[in-house]
Image (cartoon, rainbow, N blue to C red; front, side, top):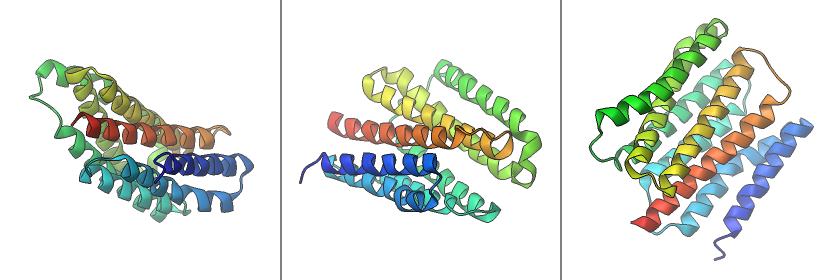
Length: 217
């Protein structure tokens, strides 16, 4: 099997999704978005040596999150958010298993960066969150933990592989932050495309991290 074919398929559906957003064609988005995690898993499976179950489960729940966030209304949003929260728990577990004994300096530096950003964005959004205040805070706290453990891994290893993960998590946080600003603060015409482009980069970089990790083992 051509190992690059799944990657071509992934980026083809990415392009379709971004194009659907730009043209405001929901039918294109409905077709393309669910295929993102499917083709990314195909790429991962075609190139892996051993299966990382935490990563696969994370991808699976991201797939469900993508599907439910295609729906409109508060219920679909909450369910989609829940699936992504569970995905992040699996991603966090994957990274946590790779950490050596954590030094307090590593934890303090990593926490300072991501917890500060967490409080800043919640402060910015708080007035507009309404009934979704608690779910959004829990989700934001969870992805902040993902950022913290990824930063600690980078501080412990300082190699290109850990950079891939850290950049992936940062893009994930950027994507979710723009999504939150678009939903709960002030809408901007460029937000929807920015959300999708940063999300695509996040998932691809995390996948590359897992594959590189696989080769190192």
